[in-house]
Every structure is written in C-alpha cells, then in structure tokens.
Length: 243
View 1 (tube, rainbow, N blue to C red):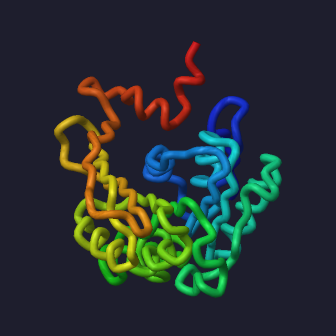
View 2 (cartoon, rainbow, N blue to C red):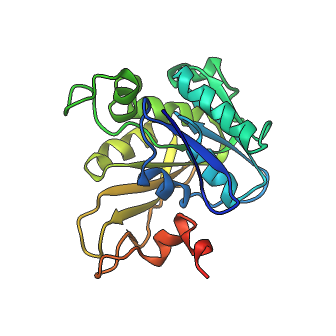
C-alpha cells in the first residue's frame, strides 16, 4: 500500500510503499550533512522512492537531483513524486545497477553524490524474505566498495560524497573511500543521548581531496529528558510547525 506524506506544511510530498524498505531517520539525518548551495548537480545512489532527493531540494531549491535505482517499482514511485511536486527535470531517476555506473552516467558529471547504502555484509544477520527489503538492508545487490567506486566515477574533481553508515564498519568505510580516490574529510557520529555509544556515522569525502579529517560534534537525537533536540527538530522541519 502507498502512503503520501508532506515533509512540512506546504512542503514537498514523498511516497512510501509497504512493499519497499520504509524511510528511516538515517535518511533525514544524512540530508543535513551536505553543504548545499545553488546549482549543484546531485546524484543519489540507490535512491529508492526519492525521499533523500526531496529533502535536499526542500533545503535548497536550486538543485538538480538524479537518482540511480535498480528496483523498477521504487523508480516508478520517484517519477510520480517528481510529477506530484512539479519537479520534472529537477528530480529524475536513472534506472539501472550502480555497479554498472559507467554505462549509466558520465564521468565527473556531478558536484555532490549522496547515498544511504545497505549496512550489512551479505550472509550476516536475519533478512526479510522479500528481495526489495533484502537489497536495502544487506549488501546482496551492491557492496560498500561498489558504492564508493560509483561515487568516484560520478564526481568532478573536488566534488563531495556524503553517506551514512554503521560505526562498526567505519574501518571498511574509510578503506573503501580511499580505494576509490575519495579522501575522507568530515565525520560526525549520531548519538541517541549525549554520551551514548554512536548508532550511526555521517561521512563526507572529497574526490582528489588532501589528507586531513575533521571530527565534528556529535548529532544528538534526544535531550536528557527524552525530548527531541532542537537540531533534530530542524532536520525534520518541525520548528516550522511551531507557533
């Protein structure tokens, strides 16, 4: 079943489908990481139904976002979301396998690449019997190395790659980035409450960047009283609901 929701009052509408992997907090958190400016050419690898692209466009309206998506059902919903929001030509999808990125999109054609990749190596953990849910959660259709190689191909010199991943795979992430000529430049942990062990890592790398890694203050989701932090409210556009 399809469900349509608005990012904020009067904002873009996104679609989710019960048969596909549901949108999660990690996508919203990732949307806060890139340093957006007008006229950026953005590619979203494994874009699903287009939520991340819509979030970026909601934050900076003067972007063009091209998604790459293997699942035809998800790609079709992205196209419908683009039409629903009047974003034809600014939010589009390239249907295909990111492992074959060189046949899909030109080298160096993007300023920013984003990705919310599958977190777990194939063969680990319990997986849903539904193939669409498997590919979103585990590296059954692409690996972290595949994602980084695709980003390295797509980015212009100096372009940025932003992604979210699990802290326990930080070593794998840094190695995969450098192997794709993407230099890690910014890392930010996500913590439920201040002082908790990180639950996610937000990372930015640069194509052709010089060595030098910046650890940014953690992104805290809850106050000590269990209420959402002001930053999380901003990420979800909740402050715009307040009187």
